[in-house]
Image (cartoon, rainbow, N blue to C red):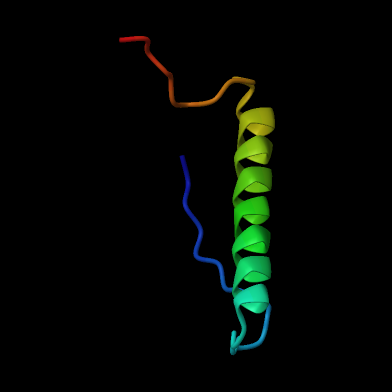
Length: 55
């Protein structure tokens, strides 16, 4: 697996209100989910790398 260094294209953020922080957290989570989904598609595995086990 190859790794790449990436940089955020957004300007420096100054999150001042609770709404701005919540919106930023939601965007960050969405980016993570999309990146994980893209990785599964390209790897050919089509399944998550983590497994959940029943106790």
